[in-house]
Length: 137
Image 1 (cartoon, rainbow, N blue to C red):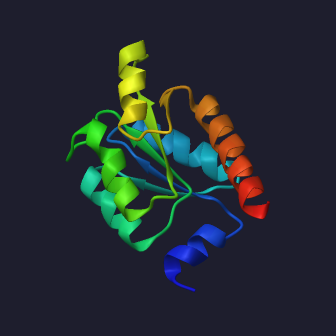
Image 2 (image 1 turned 45 degrees about the vertical axis):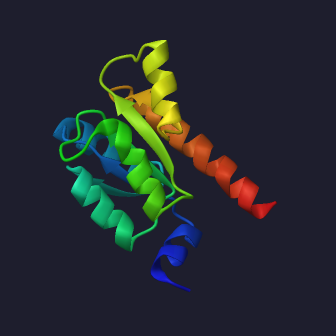
């Protein structure tokens, strides 16, 4: 069993958070770890891709002002490394209907408001629970 496969099959669901806002990283890391997730945080696209090259993640949360790459193209790079990971966009402001549709077309599973921390945690718990049920079936 390789390292990535072992990570995916572990009981604690792994989440990678990539954002350049330290308050967002600290808050989400703390809340998600308290909810039972194994959380890794990074500041740039390059750091996120390096992490994904060596470790498997169930969810990848990507901030909209992340340095080192075009926000819209980040999901494609992530999917090349880990097609099974769900990529969630974290936005600072509510997207318009066109923006949300475009982001989904670019490969984001969904977009959430980054400062609505509890909503992000609730989504992560629901999504990983459903993913576990699908794998068990």
